[in-house]
Amino acid sequence: MSSDSAPGRDRPATPDPRATIPGRIRAGWDNRAFRFVFLFLLYLGIASVVYPELRDRYRFLMEALMVGTAKLEYYLFRPFTDDVSTTGSLVVLKGFSVKIIEECTGVYEAIIFGAAVLSFPTTWAKRGIGLGFGIPAIYGFNAVRIMVLIIVGKYYPASFEFMHLYFWQATLIVMITSVWALWIFKVVIREPPAAAAG
Image 1 (cartoon, rainbow, N blue to C red):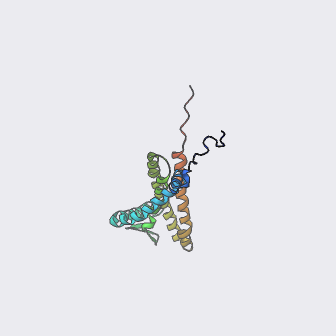
Image 2 (image 1 turned 90 degrees about the horizontal axis):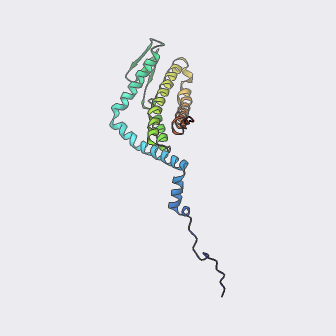
């Protein structure tokens, strides 16, 4: 008596776990790029809800940051001219005045940078290093940005709007990306030095 069935022929095929919706979600989550984008957007979404509430509740902190930024601008200009003053969040350079508002403090750029650092797949210690050096770097760059804008406003007023609305906004994006990339290459994926032979 003969049979035309081969061993294992009647076994049902093992379903591909990626064919199901949970399997696809799991496969997507295992993809580092997908996970980074998802977490980045999630953190930004959380920040967009939480930050306004915290800002309104602790308004005095934001006001202190605006006044502190104005004072920093004063001290940046002071070595070069005596004709600079500050009152509250107002900076005056030779009659040209700029009021430091919330958007001038770099807080939004810090939130974007923080979301990018927290979303990147690495250890929490390295994330802490990224936040610790990146946020002050962004704040410092923003201070230089405001200083240049004040100079442009005083001496090249026709170019002020373009510099303020377009050029420096794009530069801030480059700054955030550059600091983030520097953190990745110098901290996250930095190879330990090879041990000396012998």
